Image (cartoon, rainbow, N blue to C red; front, side):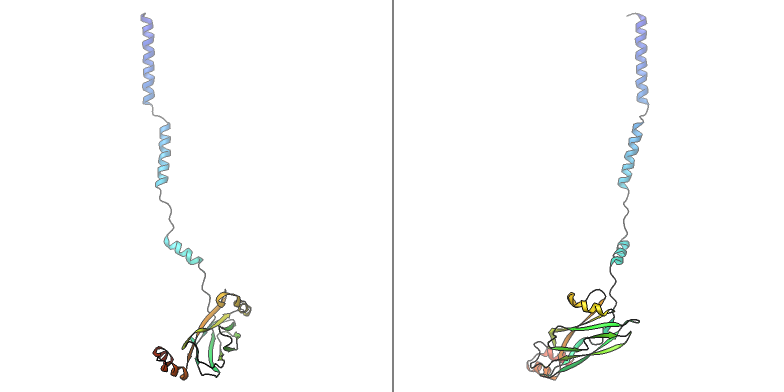
Length: 213
């Protein structure tokens, strides 16, 4: 081969070798971008999530919970205690007291045994912080109650509200209560000498102790 052509080929080979060496030495601009994106994704993956403190959740539950209904009146007696006498009217008084400082409180008394008991008055209104007495009358009964001293069947319900109209609609609500209506439930306790003697004759020491309490 002529010396001139060998010189040209050798120069071309040297130029290509220099270009390849230059390319391999020059850092790629795409890698840093990919590395940066990967780093951002990794940082996002390990970034702790914002957690709601437990007390904040409790506070939310407390805020969502409805406030308890205000008690409007109280009954002095815990039970309707009747001194039972066969074939006689038996009477007992219940004392009501209003707990509202500024508004009248309407009340209504219901019983689970309306054929046996009378209530007078069955309804009314108490002025702020005032008291009233209602009378419960047991109609004459020829025989002793089927369960005594505490009756399993007889109950009283004292409803109260700031609106008398709400008390009329309470009968359609299970349990006799609803929004804005207070309810006090009273059990019936039968006592007296007649039932004490029956319990003693039957050897019912538990009933004797309850009647003598």
